[in-house]
Structure formats: structure tokens, C-alpha cells
Length: 298
Length: 329
Image (cartoon, rainbow over all chains, first blue to last red; front, side):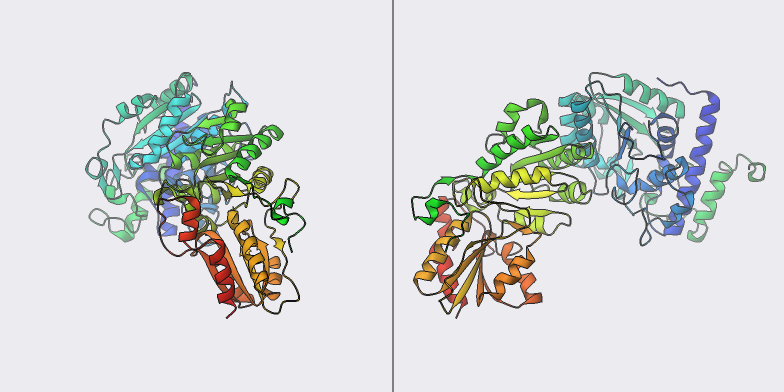
């Protein structure tokens, strides 16, 4: 397992904050898209791209790279923003999100942007693709050191196909597969517990043959430890239920399912008027919700 | 007159051999697997029925048993293709591409993934299993998807060649197979190329009235018999076999249409969205031609014996002959 020093963690947290700012800016510019999921999963993406993934932004098709398979494609603003900050393409290109001719399609398109492993959007098919990749890789390299990280939503787990894929992953004992579930507890229509209860979720995965861990999805150290442990599990696939806060980082948007499918400027108005939403969000991020004086940070 | 590459038995009017196209697929897949170790097969609990077992028995390490989960089948195939494999995903056409259309669209076609979708038990000739298992919309739903090639082989030899050609082609392909024996019309030597139509029967040029029959899949034999009968009745008739219905061989079709007064399209599929639609769409824009479409007329199938059902739904030789005469009126 890779150990992270507190300096490294501070640096990752700073990067995550910059990525969150990019997410707010690109969504505000696009005028549509999802806010809660991308902000909620920024810490996971940052840790993966800046500390854990074997990858090379200058050579996105490098055969021996780890694969990151995003299953819930609607949170792609965090994927794009993280990739840009990691050096896959210029950060300025983020402002083309969802616009005509862009490589940053409203939902990811593998053929459009190098570094995207799978097209996604319709929910539930990413895990199957990750399972297929993991099986294929093991056929060629029985002692593979590659990992296949599949990121899914929690509402997405209501898709039957997820469990078809989980069944196969369990049967095949895919130790090279690590699923990370964004367990933020809500989906477009409301809280998952109301729309379609998911619990007991850990037991569900366990019964399909997975090693299950539950972690704080915003603690770099806890996430790093969990992923390290998942990498060390050799006899079965792993799932990490990352408990996240939707819209994490912007306290006035946090934990509110109405931010699932709206960009800043079109979200619920009871706390921040629409016209102020992007500005307030950026200020909250730059000052860490008022904890630091924005003038003192560079 | 029969084309040179038609089997001698057919030319001589001998007793026609009947072999299921799925058998040709099974042999072709095994052969493709021997030629290229990147070929893999996935199946949903129908390994023997789809004849995938020939490959699975020979190459168990390159076979993935998916269980009864066709949505997973499509996307696991896509994932394997992303790692450089050449996956053949097999099931009954009713379930794949029937049940998993969106997975095929998003994870195979949109990704332009090198996956071969093999739908067995297509058409009403599935027989006694009845309407739930008779895929008669499969070509329509696959034809509408960008990047997808759609093929209906006519017999066991062509099915084998389609399989080998699919393994060599880089990109998504759907092809359909039949459960019951299809008349063997071609030979092992008959050429096959993806996207190329083949003239199988040429009209008697002395006859004044001339009808062109365009067929796909296993109704080629009935089309040939119908052409023969039409000629006996004094109508010049030709048969163009279009195994590939997408991309449509528009060059061959344009020439064929220009050489006949009217056309009859023949397919064991709904007349909505399949070969008849493809032909009509192209010709209505280029050379408006009167067309009679033989196929299922917006109905469901039912239980019965294959020949009985083919006749009931108006796809047998007398129906094609009648359509040939009617379309010239």
C-alpha cells in the first residue's frame, strides 16, 4: 500500500479544491449539467489521478495503464476537470463542456476524447465493461498488476445490469477489479431511501462475492487506505462504498438532492439566488467556506 | 439462369440439402479461433443451441459463460474489445440484440467496439417455440444504429464465411442465424465479401416483362425457385442476394433496379425496417421503382412448423411468384 505523507495529503486537498472550482466554472458556463455528484466525487477522482492510477496523460493509450471506468457518466464534469488538471488537455478547454463541437460531450464519449475509457450515460453498463476489461486482461496477463477502477453512483445500483455484472465478477473472482460507489444517498427524484431503498447495501455486495469496505469519501487518508487494501485482496473483487456528501465543498449546496441535475445558476433558490450561485460557490471554495481569508491565498 | 457459384444440386434440380446456418457459424467461429488467438466467445446459457460450444470446448480459456444476462453480455463484450479482444457475443436474436439494444447502442456501437453480435433463432422458422422466441425485428433495430453492419447469411456455407469475415473486420457487426435447416444454395467456394450483393439468377433476356427479386438470408432458395417459376410463366426474373443489408450495396442495387420493371424484396423479417425498407428508401431517392415487399406484415409469429409458418405469413414460393406477377401489373 502506498503511504501518503501529510504534505502529500495537503497537496491533494489543494488540487481537489482547484478541481471543484473548475467544476463550478464549467457548469456555470455550460448552463446545464450535474453539480452534486461531481463535487461529491472530487476527492476520489483527485486521489486516483494524482496519487494512485498508473497512467500517463501524455500517452493516454499506454497499454499498461490502469483503467478508470466511469459508469455514471452524468458526473463527467469531475472526470473532465480532473483529467485537465492532470495534464490530459488544457484547463481552458473545460469551458467547452456541452457546447457544439466539443470533445467534452454532455456524457462521455470514448471516441471523442483520448483518456476516456468508455462512453457512458445510460446507467448500469460501466461495471459490465470494467468486468469485461478485467477478464480480458487476465486472459493475457494472469499475473496482472493492472487495476480496473469502476466508479458508479448509488441510485445507479437500481439498474439490474449492475447485479448481472456483479454476479459475473464474483464468479470470476476478479481481484483486479475495484468498484467505488458514490454513496451520497440521493438521486434525481429524491433520497435513495425514498425512491428505492438500497440498504443493506454492503450485504448485497458481499453476497455477490465482493470484499466490501465503507469509507469516508472525503478523507484522502481513509480512501487511500481502503483502495490499498482493495488492491491487496487477491481472492475476490472489491467494492468501496464511499460515503460522500453531494455538492461537497459548497456548504450552501450540500446534501440537497435538488442539486443533482442542475448547474450553478439553475439550482434551488431558497438559500442562494440563481444569479449568485456560481459566484457564491467559487467564493466558498476559494475561502474554504470562510475559514480563510481569500486575500491571503494565492 | 443460375449464377456459376450456385451449388450443382440446385442447378440440376436435385434434392436440396438443408443445414442450419447456426452450424456454419459454429464451424466458422472455431476456425476463426484457430486463426487468431484474440478471438473470444461469450454466451448466455445457450452454448449448444447457438453452436458456440464448438469453440468453447476447444478454447475453454477464451470462452466466458455469462449466464442468463444479455445486457451484461453486450457490455462485457465491449469491455473485452477495449482490451484488444475480438469478442463474438452469442444468444438468441430475440434476447441479443432484442433485449440489450441500448447496451449494444451505447457500449458497442457508440464506442465503435470490435464486437460481433450473433443472433441465432431469427425469423418465424424458429417454429414451435412461438412468437416470444421468433426475432423478426432484429435487423430493423440493428440497422438503425450508426457504425453497425447487418448481415443475414443465406446458408451454412455463407454463415461460415460471414463469421470468418466478421473476425477480420474491425468494428461492430450484427449477423442473424436460423434454428432450422436452410436450403444449401452456395458452395464452399462461392465468394463472400461484406457489403457486396451477388447476382444469383439472371433473367432470360428474351422475355419482355422483367421482375427483379432482392432477397436476404435463408429465403434465397425460395427466391430462386420463384424466379424459375416466373420464367416458366414467361416473365423474366432475376435474383440479387443481399446478405449484407447495411451497408447496402447501392451500386449493385441501382444497376439491378434499372435492369427490371419492378422489384420484389424477400426477407424473413418484418417488412418494416428490414431489407424491403432499405431497398425502398434508397430507390425512392434515386430511381423510384415499384416494389412488393415479402416478409412479415406487421404481425407477431406463432407456434407451428417452419414451412407451415413461412407459408402462413406469405413468404413461400407461391407467395413470391404471386408478388412478382402483381408488382408488374
